[in-house]
Image 1 (cartoon, rainbow, N blue to C red):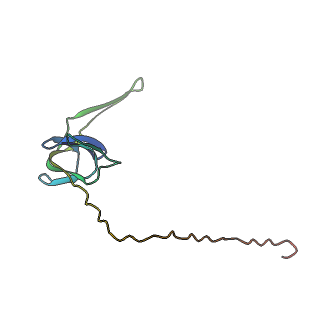
Image 2: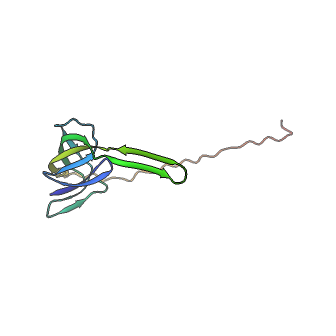
Image 3: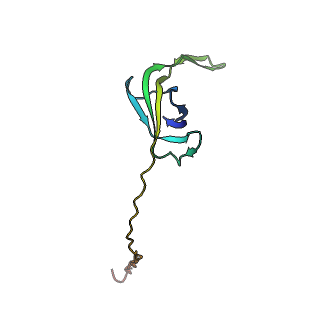
Length: 140
């Protein structure tokens, strides 16, 4: 079984036991995080797509660690102007271990044996008329 989840605007295809790097999350290492914004699920027999999210489905993950990616070089230059700028950047990430994907079946609706005949509600419309008074120079 796998699920496609949305974490911080990025989509990840995950299944039980996967380890993924996501953008930094505000959780301490060792805590469990639950995601309910599931875009699609597949259990081998049935594929379910959400509109926009799949209902009654959650993905539980454990926060393993926080870290930073490999250093990237940012270099800017404008030719014939004497402008050169060198900078570096390291993006933060959170490593997650996917523990389980749960799908709850919605509760069946109770049907009553007694049915009441519904009468359509009458629509009440009101006419609103605005009276404008125009004063002429003679009345003033």
